[in-house]
Image (cartoon, rainbow, N blue to C red; front, top):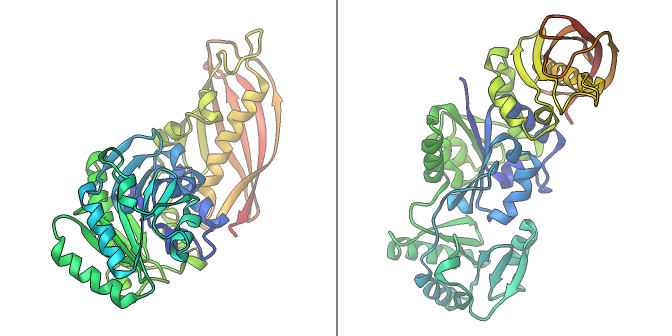
Length: 412
């Protein structure tokens, strides 16, 4: 299956129990994006708390998206554009807050980089602020701090009295149907969101905007809130740490979040099926436009298991002051070609690191020309790849011959 999009839950899925994206996880997610598959983070977390994670796995470089607040807001990470959002009816917030006080529950909501709450000492609210790197503002009346202009995307109630939480959840599902959707994300959290806001509904909106069919999508999650999106897509994967009811709704079960279950699932479903023809050179060129490759005007033109080609213009970015191709730019071109070649050759549980480059500059290329780099594999070992990269002018004159050694390592 030629998957185009992978949607990931965050807590209990992308993150391990220490709330960390592991080295192996990050390497796998970068690699799959380099193959032209976009990533989406779909989480109940607020946008402010989700943003550092999205940037860590480079969604902004590869055209990924964030679905924050359980889908209440969708953001294009490449542009910062808010693609879709739906906010809570502010006229109902005083009622929600009064009901929380009646039950003795903590009440809070999010605004920009802060949590507004009537109970700053509540450990669950404090933990929520810490997880998302947000400030805590204690106010006697949360509703009084909110107006229609900055209406929140959701409100939260919290209590360790799980029976009372369940009682209010059931009451509100009947009384507030059509006004809010109500659900528990944890035994101690009751979430109140606008109607029809969940990960699957927001994901459907995003897929329609992107022109991607659901069967071209993989979704991975561990919670009850993830079930709808697991059932929507072509391949729904439950984490090994998910509840049995979630696993029963998935197409496949992977390892736990402590065992890099997301990386394993992606390696099996996508990377192990890597073929040169499946690599979108257009997507690679587009995703690299803000990196060194893009600044130098380098463009991939061909990729196979034993040969990779790319071009680079000789212009103000790549020439020396007197109009001749710069040797450093030539080496950057060669490393770009060999890097993609090793990416194709690496196994799913491997990563590649450049170790050595040495080149012989044999002749010149002048401003206005476009040089072509042709990389061929000389040695494919268990711990290293050796590439020869020849650089030619547009008239096939050999400019440079470069030897590159890439080290192959197991992901940790």
